Length: 172
Image (cartoon, rainbow, N blue to C red; front, side):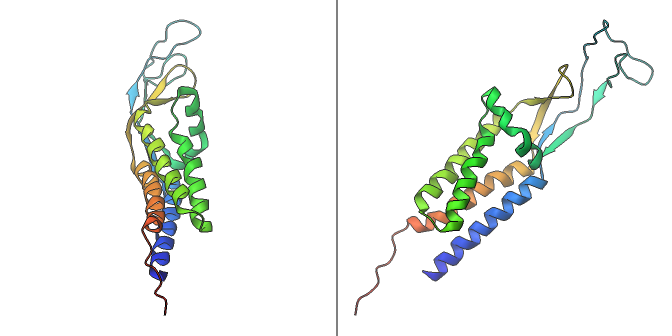
């Protein structure tokens, strides 16, 4: 029984470490792309340095958002019916229940629900760039995303052992 609790605490600690790590890691990488901006004073023209006449560069390099960037503004996905960010709320609730030693079934259910909500990240196609004249399209989900999803699985695993039947204490 003590060993089982120690393993559960280890998985909870690993889940917490995974969540903190995913905040620092790149979560989404956007494509480098060329675009034609719209200018308020007519069609744009390029100068010799490749800058549009209305002040925008010809191409934007590939950029990435960290997990912290996604945590900061991911709730806006609600406006585009992308609920992946809300998995954080489910994961936080599961983490609090697990750390407090609460009921394992709700914690596992919340953690697995967070994992499933997080899978909607695969439908994320881009975010608005600077201004309203272009969108940064997603190239791929990066390591931070996968560590974030691992957080939910570690939480679920930490509580799953408590679902197993416990050996009955022998009476003398």
